[in-house]
Length: 70
Image 1: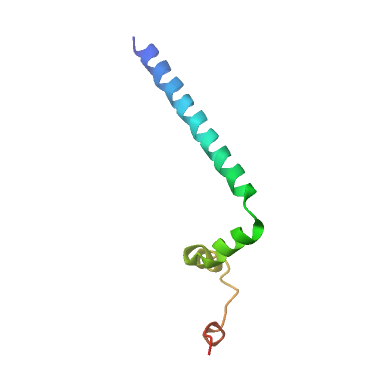
Image 2: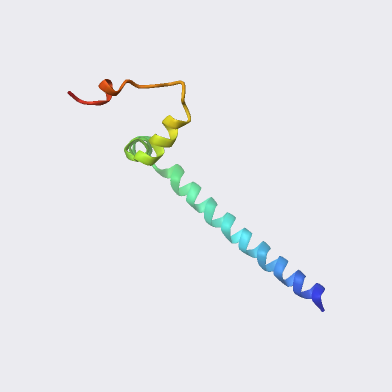
């Protein structure tokens, strides 16, 4: 019977989604227990995140001269 197979697949998918949500929940709790300065430190030191963040602000431009530590 095809309907029973579909029901089985859907229940399996539902179980997987619940497990995924559970993992995300644990990860969120883990993130929230981190101190703010550690989080900020990681964000600031991650070039990819800062690059994507700055690219979200096209109107905000930093002169190249101010970026260099000369």
